[in-house]
Image 1 (tube, helix red, strand yellow):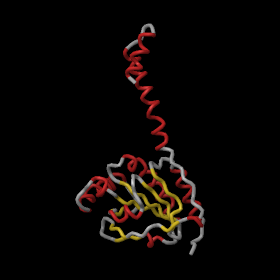
Image 2 (cartoon, rainbow, N blue to C red; image 1 turned 30 degrees about the vertical axis):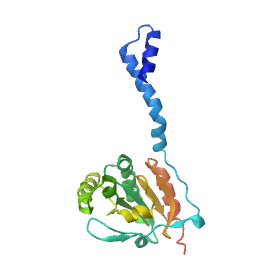
Image 3 (cartoon, rainbow, N blue to C red; image 1 turned 135 degrees about the horizontal axis):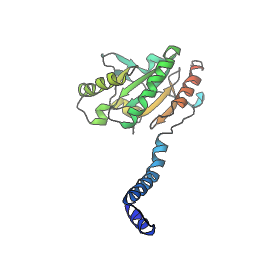
Image 4 (cartoon, rainbow, N blue to C red; image 1 turned 120 degrees about the vertical axis):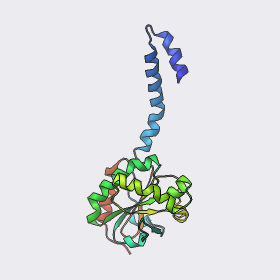
Length: 202
């Protein structure tokens, strides 16, 4: 990109070094903008009820040692978000989840954050991970339960990248899967509203 700027400059009278820098910045933006826009424009439709698969079972510990399971939330719509404190995309989307939890928690919905800091950061154990997660949760005002993830849940949900977010219906089946930064909060909210209107299927 710098070579292009140098070849353009001699052709224009009165060309200034600052103009060369501007051209370089513009060319750089043209290169990276498609990737950024693709990452930030995540939309996903609901999977038809007949085609949904059961969410893999798990039993994970929260900060206070309480065990939570996906089966505990049968009859509710569940947003299950896999994240890590040093994952840039995760940090970007968490404010949306905080707002969604506030808007729908009294309507049969809850969000759960599953920290994958142990594997993401290569940490020794859950204690080391919690030493990162607890200050993060306090600083950002996270208003939904956080559990500590492990290798078993990573394999169960085939987690290859973070963040990864699943909407699970009232029957415990995966209705929507998001991979990437969930910037469009409205898309998530619309899917939650639709799932809240569905009956519990046996």
